[in-house]
Length: 433
Image (cartoon, rainbow, N blue to C red):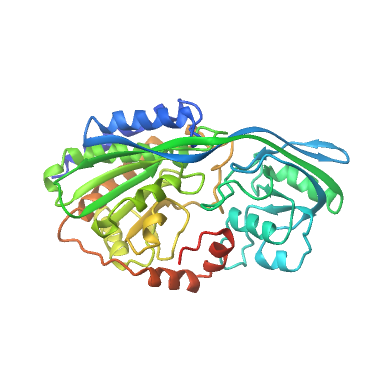
């Protein structure tokens, strides 16, 4: 009964797929590289699953050009944030610190180029996402946006702007390293600076990868990841590891297919990094009442302990903790809403779902969304250990003895209000209720 554990711990299938993804070049949404990664994932899943296919959909394409910040003393290094408009602006430079809602309320940023840090202070009671800070700047009349990393190492951060209604942002936006940001704030706060972004903006296509295992049932468990990554790095942590884990779980579950009472539907989404586009497309075209649960893998393998956002679904928390107890392996669970990965396109309407990531000591993304997101940061041992736990969890979710009730959209909306997340979602244009 335990031979599968040893088999998983010796398997190189998922790790080899991770190497394929990171060695393939940029996987930016809508590019040839993203499509090639999706095709490689399709081919890997075809070894173990049925009905393996690509589902193509249109997106707003965006490809990076050069970007500059010109100060009275010369040019500073920066990179464009994806879906920034291609524009040149000038304005008073305002270092707004963390860029909390109250910082915007207390500061006049009309006509300014605003810089905010990627983190929030220890005393603040919630995380404030990059896009929330960006849209406060837009709302208050800023003409440009500078996003400063809070980690040392000369690593400018990336991350998209824009929303479903307006996929290209309203004002040009760039990322700068902590070191550049500190220098800008120290020397040029209140001075006039110039900001310029070049980008190729055109229609494009992306695709989701689908595969299935188990019986053909009315109920299904979704096991998901996203295959795209930002173009500045290998995207090993975000999210090559998640897609590689989907492939590994497909291999492991194929060997135990007779234990599955429900259909297990694997999806590797495209275009997550530019607004959850692939999962949004799938969610609109899927009967969500059929979904028992979603196991979304985005941020696994970064650290040894798995962390589960359970979105208030007590049954999901309990079954994850049962697996941890069975294997004597720690996990971390968070009952709050986590509206920042592909599961959210379903969970926001009440579908039970996990966002599975890793518990780290870092605040924010760590190496993620920087040049530092490379394979050398991950351990094969961690990948294998987590594959064992996630396989056991997927088996339990697909058991017809496991039940978890859907929530109502009103329940999810109330939870977001209670957790002080609603304000940010409203300002970004992501509030669906």
